[in-house]
Amino acid sequence: MKIVQGSPQLYWTMHVKRKMRYYALSENRVKRVMRKPDRREFGIAPNTIAVMQKTGTKKYPTEIWSMYQDVTSKRKRTTKVISAWRYPGVSPKGKLPEIPEDTLLELKRMGLND
Image (cartoon, rainbow, N blue to C red; front, top):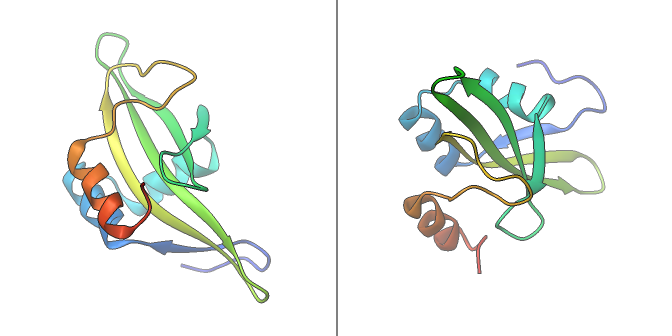
């Protein structure tokens, strides 16, 4: 992947890689959700952002969610992609959808959720 000068580099955690495999999401699909979200919320972990794009059909709507954290150091900006998941249905606006239990446990293990 070619990084454009000034744009943040992406760091993919092992957790998000497993979730992407489980939900059959590609890196490009998750990046597209992050680049042009239909909705943006505060993430459940400190200093994180959760973004969503609508998918599915009118009859069977789904949403793809991604949670990430922007990390800035003196030399570079990095976006740490923490999790991605597919939500069945339409999540309520103004709050995050129900997060899968295994994701919450993994975030706790990573030290991102108190």
